[in-house]
Length: 432
Ligand SMILES: *Cc1c(COP(=O)(O)O)cnc(C)c1O
Image (cartoon, rainbow, N blue to C red; front, top):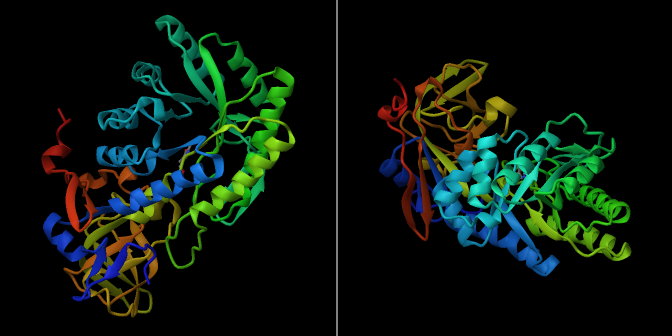
């Protein structure tokens, strides 16, 4: 009935998340409100971690791609589950460290890390820096030299495999701002360059082929391409590559149309390719890293809103307006992302209407979705939008000077505030 397995309906006909009444949550904390189910986050962390144990004998690390949803509480939870994290900026790195993340388990990504960010990563002792380009390697090498340090680096590779939901394409994929292209020889030259940098310790390769991928073939193809490159490096340069980081991108169910595979299926399919290739070519099994973001956070979250005005335009459509929108969920205006919504206080009623859920910003495109099946609703009703745990809070903005919603975590029947709702005073804090 619901896209996420933690959602249900109670005896009052109210939507529940992790067994907690969402209408009561809206009343207690106000709306718009992000609600994250800690148990489900932990359950996703465990399933990825267990598949590393099962398919690689524990010889690997799951790094949560924290851009999906980042706040101190989330970093604490994933660390407690034994995961590492990906960060792509000083802000994510700072938050991760403030939450007590082990720096050795941090992968630092980004196509344009600033000198300040690189220094910060070196000062914290970040375990892996994913180098994106030659300029970055030169900068990193000289910053290391100046401070008498060395850095462990992986190189970001464009494997020429580009996955989009149900299929993947083998493209040149040269036209991407991330990483080094394989087929032009750029990636091989980058490895040679890395090996020449005295203060850099080249330990591995990284790729990330896309997001919301619902099929295993793209991952299998990418693993094969990356291992072929590892073999070439071994054969031609005499260097064994220790780490193979295969990125994230595992798809989740947003609506009934999506039919994602259990995460273990992805892991299993890829592990078969890796084991076969390594055995056949006498290559030691690399240390495997994966970087799930969306798949850990998205299904665990919902957003609660209060309905305001309703505008019925005869023969055209019905707009139901809510007290949030593109500021807290920009995924519709950015990519027409599809979501499932429920009137939380009428969750046991049938979805008899089809509506457009509109936000309150001064943009016509500020919608949560069009043609959404929904229960009949009135002003004051609570709407829950499902599977909003990833790329909502982390992409939120203050457009129209709206205040960012609070984030509440729930666990074992209890709720607690993890991020306070912004105040009007917060909005002018930095204004002079
Ligand atoms: C965004 C990103 C991820 C996570 O992608 P999801 O689709 O959220 O799993 C992992 N690795 C890198 C390098 C990324 O940029």
